[in-house]
Amino acid sequence: MIRKHLIDALSAALARSGVEPLPATIEIGRPARAEHGDWSSNVALVCAKVAGRNPRDLAQELAERIAADPPVHLRRVEVAGPGFVNFHLDGGWLHDVLRQVIAEGTDGYARADFGAGTAVNVEFVSANPTGPLHVGGGRWAAYGDTLCNILARCGFAPHREYYLNDRGRQMDAFAESLVARNGGGEPPEDGYHGDYITEWAAEMPAGADALEWGYARARRDVAGSVARLGVRFDTWSSERALVRSGAVEETLRTLEASGAAYRADGAVWLRSADGGDDKDRVLVRSDGEPTYLLPDIAYHADKLARGFDLLIDVWGADHHGYVERLTAGVCALGHRREQLEVVLGQLVTVMRGGEEAKISKRAGNLVLLDDLVDIVGADAARMTFLLQSLGSRQTIDLDVVAAQSMENPVFYVQYAHARICSLMATAAERGVDRPPVDDVALELLSDPRELEVLRSLHALGDVLAEAARERAPHKLTTWARQLAGAFHGFYHDCPVLRSDLDPPLAAARLWLTEAARIGLVIALDLLGVSAPERMESLAADSGEAAE
RNA sequence: GCCCCCGUAGCUCAGGGGACAGAGCAGGGGACUUCUAAUCCCAAGGCCGCAGGUUCGAAUCCUGCCGGGGGCGCCA
Image 1: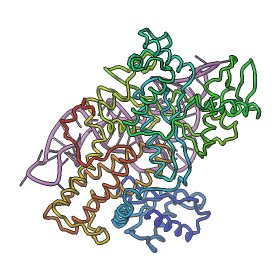
Image 2: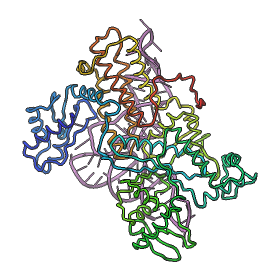
Image 3: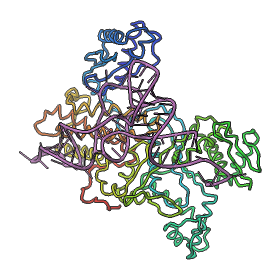
Image 4: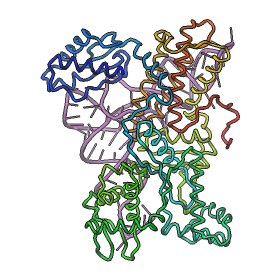
């Protein structure tokens, strides 16, 4: 709202100053320092060169024109630094924000439609169905799920998908290991040696097909683990089913027919080097077995055939070398490069007992996602994964996490929400009157603490759009912490229900509190973290309280 | 050798062209007869790995180096 008014004013001033061509976009931002005003524009700096003007002079001229025909809420406009045009506003623009938050509520506020209904398939986790999910899998689960939540709020139509590599050598080794343990023996050398194999083998009914049974067992286990984090997949795709359907063979035929694949040395190769890869890659080995790549290409073609406009794959960074060949294969089938986007996440390092816990399903020294959730709870676990960008490696020290679980930022944010609920409950108890927001004198909200909460709420729309566009859900986490901080500060300095408070101010503050609640609810919901109405006591939750 | 990611306060990390770089934790000092102190405030803490370049402006973009992690198979 305010942004549009200011940009319009700048645009008009530029036109009247004879600057042409007018810049394609005029950007305004929120300066870091209060003395630089509420909003700031660099247009004069950007335009100075093409306009053949001195930036400060141009900025001065723009400022004068704007002052002569001031946009709403403008108090004064100044030129600063090398040529910034700084807008100093009255608090009214923030009171407008408050009205908007209240009017639009948790469903409507900060909702965008730039996704334009784009059907986007987000594939994440996709760990092999040969065992329980380890801690690292939680990062992909939390990331993928929250990304989908954010995309949905921005107008996309996301679909959560898990791909199961349920055939091949490792599945055979997994099945053999189950059979061996079931018979009281040792798994083969290259089999799976974890304790869970022994446990699962004991559960396996006599006469069961170990591969089928083990697959179902593992899948159920993974589904249960991610469900504890609040993650549910819309589709579990099976590689075996894909093979059975003939889609893999058909993909091969299509690639060969178009010349994208060729035979050499007894194998079938993909001309991936033409698509930007280092070299051509084998699709079918000389012994007739397809490599990983061929069914993967078929799988991605299948996803596109199911009507998705965009595929987002969330992979561990250890697979980065695989991106180009898959992309080349998908493009060779006639799809556009932009339809497949691979997000690479750095791996999670788990520390235990002061040293790195090497994660290997085969060796069996797993640190399970379930273990982490047992220790810190689902909310703290999920928040932990969403704290930092996927590009930076995450180290989870189980000892530290257990010892400091109460210091997890999730409680800071949840506490803000709980405080609000408590405030509202007290207000209801005391029968405090809260007239409709339109009847309340919001201009009474002028304390820096109050305005800070409103500024924070205003930023949510931008934060969400950025998080969606950059596939960076952690930006929302950062925002939630910021809003919670602003609210805690407000709560501390600005009494809402104190008896000596003027009723009009109390009413305005109650609405401000309600707006903060709306912001927190939106963020916590998108992050997949609960918004408790009260915090459980500290003592009851001392580390091993596993629910 | 080539490719990808990272290097910011003692620690864990935000910030990823805009003005004087932020938060949490640890450590120092304060604030509860009050709507929950899981909170708040103050002080302290930085050649933003190094060196060049682009730009009116670089922690941010480009190049090179250094350091850490990962990947370079007719494995998955």
